Amino acid sequence: MLERIHKVRAAMPQEVDGLLVLQPENRRWVSGFTGTSGMAVIGRQGQPVFLTDFRYTQQAGQQCQGFDIVRHGQEIAADIKAVLGDLGITKLGIEKDYITVGQNAKWTAEMPGIELVPLSDILLDLRAVKDEGELELLAEAAVIADKAFAHILGFLKPGVSERRVALELERHMVDLGATGPSFETIVASGVRSSMPHGVASEKLLEENDFITMDFGCIYEGYCSDMTRTVVLGTASPRQREIYDIVLEAQLAGVRGIRAGISGKEADALTRDIIAAKGYGEQFGHGTGHGVGLAIHESPRAGVTSQDTFVVNNIITVEPGIYIPDWGGVRIEDMLVVKAGGSRNFTTSPKELIEIK
Image 1 (cartoon, rainbow, N blue to C red):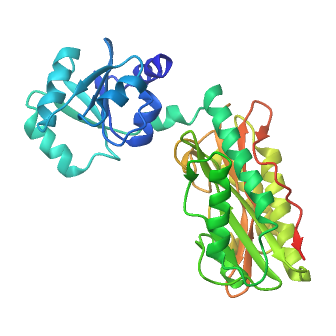
Image 2: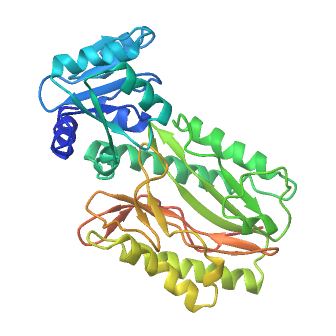
Image 3: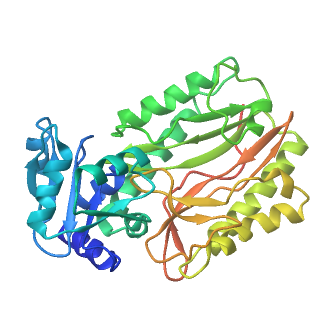
């Protein structure tokens, strides 16, 4: 974790002399701590400190390499202030998008002499660039999802509920080593496939349904995310037409992802194709997002994105077309950005699969 601490110190703005990390994924990234209660304090120099309660002191001692471990009591603010004094911190950066207004006010009142400085999430930007260890875990999470997709093809048949499909996907991923799903599994069939986030329902699969499955798993803390749309039976000409448009757009997005491209440009790779085919209004979400310890991270690929992709960013490519009262298609892969292109972690086939 020493290298990550160095990165945090280098990214600290000049107006602070220390940083308090509470947000769970940020906390895990910088310290290695996987528990649910604790905070890291990082000054510009000296040993960083991890504060937690009596339930987690032993765990923190095992996981938080390079940190001094401090057990806090009921008066948390007093214990934080004591640590800040030891580290010479008087201007403390806090995560403005995570700490509540009430918590900020309480700590301000209880820590006189300490200025709490709200900061944008600098760790989110640092986390967006994955190291080799993170890439290995993300790749394995993607492998598990690919294997689950191959498995589920033999499970799909008329009369099975979307919910049963979701549970089978999740069960199989756990059997393969995942700790659980990385988000609530989406299984949307028939007319429900026009719902981009159609979480699995009790609807039964029917002959000739589109079935969109958007799912992933958590492996050693890291997420995967993929989407495939199949037909249960024989695809109609219109189903094949819509599917082929989405596939063309998705393949163009995958081919065009590289370091140096902006999130807005990446989004246009897929959006322009769908719009040219007359379905621009039926593609209402962004082309992709980062993935890591959280299922949605930086960078983003969308019409308003201000991000520029760099080497070892993770980005999904997931265009779709959604036609109310008819159905929809989405295809999604998870890529790691490279200098001249990308590496696709998702290897499941993308040609239209008809399950007969």
